[in-house]
Image 1 (cartoon, rainbow, N blue to C red):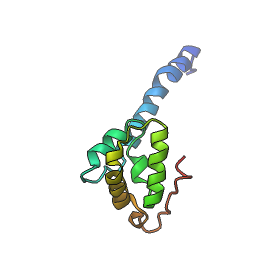
Image 2: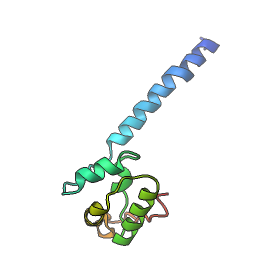
Image 3: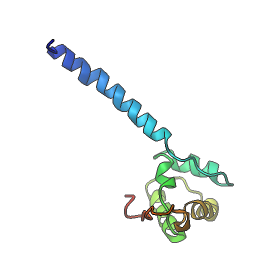
Image 4: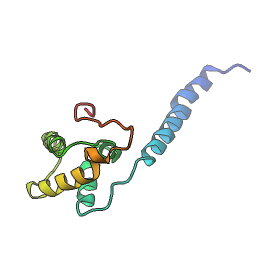
Length: 114
């Protein structure tokens, strides 16, 4: 049975986008949740407006590297209050510092995450 031009059009316009959307939704659901802590809600509210939590959970940066990331995100429009900055750095450094990287998992630098 031959597939008509109409069939290809249906496949390209309906079926493939649905499959792609489903795949991306499942991939996003596989991310690790942000660990509990006093700044969890602020990190979630501030950072996940533009990207998913895996962008945070997969990095293992030093306190200085997290500080550089916060500066970069602020310059890109993230609303990071000056009064929250130290607490955000504490949360990120404690939960996603270099020592939290799993065995065999290389540390992702700020340059690799651009």
